Structure formats: structure tokens, C-alpha cells
Length: 340
Image (cartoon, rainbow, N blue to C red):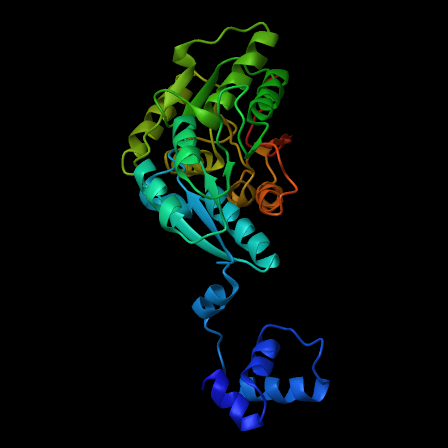
């Protein structure tokens, strides 16, 4: 049933029915509004969102693009951190009366195309390299707020991230206090960049402050391909049994928990035989046993901050580029052995 048919059946104007649909009841009698609501419910009327947007000249859509390259692309949205971030963004966008359009991009060209064609008021873009961010800012015709994207020091851009360097520095200090000296840093890129590079920088800073040197041998790269990772985890089992390392510092909870599961199946005990740490403090770290020692980040706060910056730009209350880094802290589980 159309708005016109509903209006005719109640002998009111289509504008009156439209006002009820959109909540504009200031000049309407409560009895009239109630009759229209009952008729809308009776016929289960669903507003045409396309027509609403055309009428307002505003899409009411916030575009969310994720491209975390340190996650396996095919399964990127299954990563608890990514899915938690998207859920927090969607909830915050909806609370503002807007709608979310989501896309998991596989390359920079795809992101550029989306930024040009999506009818969105603005974009939240997650996990791009700095050069991709620069290109996107030059090409896009709408406001963009980046999440977990890092430029060079001194560059001006809108980004919401974490004190990644400080978080891994705190974790390394924690391990050193427990007597660990043979620490292996585990990531999934031959050359770390972005947030992972900052986390390694924090780790190295803490080692230097503790009088320890760092070498390339203290970094272990695992594959992004989940079919190949068991081979890497088997090599980590061998290192642990030969006492080459006493603790494995994983770049994320996802890999840490996956490795712990592999270790259990192959007779390697955590933390008795090898200690393990992660980064994110997501749902996996809280349900695995022993509970994972990790670095906490408030994903909901990160999402809300990114949207506050974006809507500040749209409302013209934010004039200058805003780079925010939220605090991180160590969450002590039972996956690290005290060697003292």
C-alpha cells in the first residue's frame, strides 16, 4: 500500500502521513497521528529509503571500508578485532540516525573507486598504508577519517589509532620483570609497517632500556595463508623445545590463540614449556585457557572517536586535521610464566 492510498483511506493529505513516518508531529493532533500509525502497522508499510534520501538531498550513509592487509583477505571479517570494530562503528553510526555501508576492499584501486562512486556523507577507512592514505585524500571528494593508519611525523590527517608503541613497550617491560630474556617477536610481514612497525619499535625501546640488544633473529614471520601457518607453528614448537625462546610475542591475539591451540595439539604446554602474549584483548583472549596475557585496546572508544571526528568535520566544528591515539594497557592472564 502506498502513502497516497493510506492518506485517502483516512481522508488526510499525503504530507500528513509522511510527517508521521518521519516523526514530524509538532502541528498534528495526537488522535490523527495514532490513526495513521495504526494504518501503517496494519499494512506493514516500509518507507522507501531511496526516495527519502532523494527528497532530503542527503544520503544518510556513512561508508566503512576495511583493508587490514595483515589479515588474510578472504577471512578478514572473521578476525575478532575487525568484526568488533565494524560492530562498534555500525552501532555508533545508527545511534546518530545514519546508515552503514560496508566494504572489505582488496586493493587501493578498489578503495579509490568506492570513494568516488558511493553516495556517502563521509568515509571511515581502516588499515591503509600511508601512501594509500595520501592518494585517497587527494582523490576523494568527501570527508575521510582513517583508523589505524599512520603517516610520517608532522603530516596532517584525520586518524584515530592506539598508543601501539607504548602498549608493546609496556608488555616487554612486563616480560623483563618476570625474568624473560629470550623473547621472540612474531608477525606476518617480512618488513613490518604501520601499527605493527610501531609495536616492534616499542618492544625494541623497552629492550634497550633494559640493557638488551635486538637483532633480526629475534623476529619470526609467519604466513598470512592459514593453510601454511601450521608449518610455521611447528617451527615455533621446535624452538621452544630447544629453549631458543622462552616467550613468543604475537602481533595480535588472533595469531596468539591460533598458535596456542596448535601447541596444545602437539604436546607443548603454555606457559610451562613456552609463554605466549598477544595484542588487542579481544574475545579470543578472554575465552582461551590459559587466559592470554595481552595488550588491551578499547575498540568501542576507537569507533566512537572516529565518528566524533567525522561528524565534527560535517558539522564544521572540527577545522584542523585531528590525530588521536587512545591509551593501551597490559592485561595479565595466565599464559606467561614467571621465571624469577
